[in-house]
Figure (cartoon, rainbow, N blue to C red):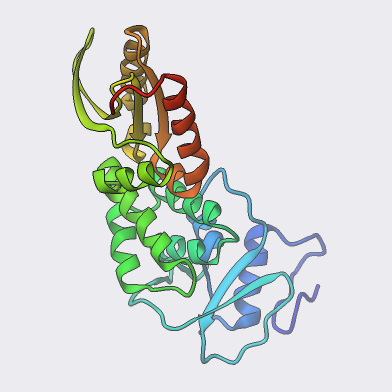
Length: 261
């Protein structure tokens, strides 16, 4: 059965996902085309992200006919050794993730793709960081680089000055930072605390690994039992939903009264 100019199937059933990927590459031209973006990540094993489109890329100077069902992307250049030659021609996960973030329909989707790539071990945070330095992208350059820095550096990348700026922008006094407290489980440092008892803990990616979630929950529960009110904000969420999270912080601060910061 014919499925394009150069693709012929020896069966009559619908093409499988893998066969559709091969068809896309063959129809575009296997010397110039590569499966890219989210599709390349899915081939590498990406889970919990649904995108049925087939994303393929070619160099911007290539003259090709794009087959039906393919999300077409032209890139300025290829990163050295970015295309894997074993199996379906596809870009390496770090490259695919950064490109997918630039091609995403929103900042939120871009951040999710980068997070899932790191969390599922498809590319290390360091690989993502190196890739952002050699791939500029056409959209949301600053946002992608900031999210990757957050993933690579964790909660410290937000920085005291960044959170202080957000507090001022939302009419909040500057809180104390890295406050040492004593809990039933020993000493702990709080990311942010006001003297009226409002605590904000900003979670980087490392807070979702292994037993870190349990340790964080124990600490938060201990604070609440001692009378503090604790809010948890994931770092990427703070970048994507800045106003919503800061409004919650402002509401919590107002409810506890205006004791000195």
